[in-house]
Length: 345
Image (cartoon, rainbow, N blue to C red; front, top):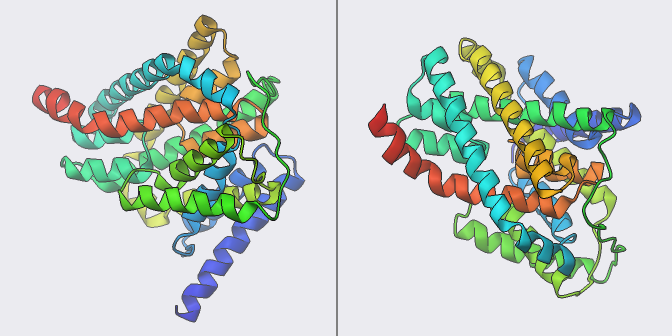
């Protein structure tokens, strides 16, 4: 690896870590996610070229997925199974809200329907951008809109929940396993194995879903190998925050400055619809409103799970809602576009 590239990687990670440390010092919500994300985005937008080592994001996802999976006690697994129908309904409703946002974006931003549709679905940045190109859309606006949505959700919803005191309302007690040096390597090895198998099969979000499944399976079987140290969970947030921040490249934003204001409005509409729906579902199911807002928010699973962990809002339940939505969005988006939107438009 060239020395210049190595130095750029090191500088980027140092800036991300410094951003997290500063935000933690200032008691900002989600400091180890927001600090790196905003610090890297600001410097990248100023025109400086930053980058992170290949595989660093996957390391962050692996640590986070393992940490989430350790919360899946047998009681939690039974609770999730009882609410699977609610999860499917919420996922399908989120797709419906994405359709509304897409129609607005197509009309006001004057983009093709594929670009508008995949910009508006609550799916992953990479997955939706690839789907857009597959169906004749443009990758750049989709990437920008998806990144903007995650930034909007992560910077507004956690802060709002903290300000109104909607924290610590988990429907079940979180598992608290101590760190065990002897068992931790086996836990990580299991996460790497399952994550690697899912990545080999090209399953979306493999490096967070695989470790989550591995750790959840171990926890449900009551094989208490080890807990996840807080420092490693903070590291996972730094790596994920750095990756999100790098999406905001100056040249990309400038090239799409006509599209950006409309993407902002559609993002606000999409977030607002999902938040209102989450509050409504909470009233029907009796689940805490704060937990349901995070469960249906159109942010990424990693970001919403981090938020849930920090605010103590039922991490495994929220993760389960997002897992169901991920699979339905990835599985249905192409079919919806091909058989509904494409013939209609």
